[in-house]
Image 1 (cartoon, rainbow, N blue to C red):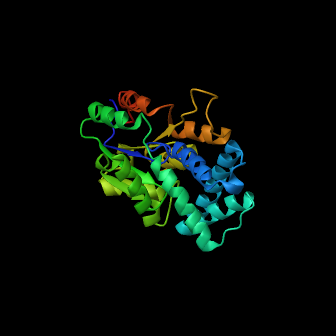
Image 2: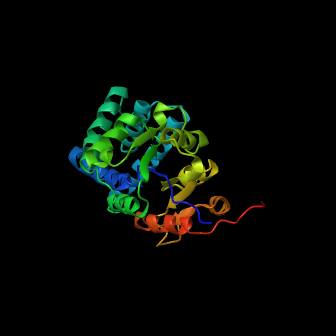
Image 3: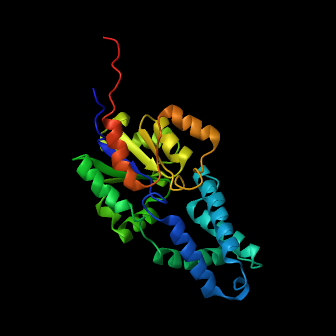
Length: 261
């Protein structure tokens, strides 16, 4: 017998549907240009690499509970400015980040394969329901959905900031299934981070899909142990959202091995 198609397809937001890294790059470069002064001579590539590193470091501190959401923003601004010889106090760091955020928001956009993927899923699996699981606060993530028009395409948004636990904790994936009234084995989760998204989902009983946009290039960004665990858990690896409907259709048409009667 064949496996049924998914009842629910859940997505990560940033760098899966929403082009976060592209908007960050555009935003920080435009902001530094507007600031001038000590930032004028900053190497654009090094500045972006530093900003990315600080986001990763301080956002993970927020997810771990050692910083609140506003605090991780202040720390990112403070550390970036300090690297360029500028000292920011708490309020000044908040204002600095708020000004950057305007440039970042002006560059918000979806990945070009996002909406076509949702359309193709609706055709391939009539009645399939679409949702999001995001490690973040519901209000700022909701602004991204509204500004890009994605809010009318998803049924439920599960944000870690409202729950007190985050991906890859299996509870967030199972909570999402409960919200949709679906069993984990009927649900798919798609994300760009191998361990946080795909392995986390698969370990919780969902079908985990790793969106590895580097796969067409240098072979992907997964660590060897993670890749091995993903293979053991049956994680599906795709290089583009355009490949998702076909990958899920192929899975649903793979005969299941009958158990003992």
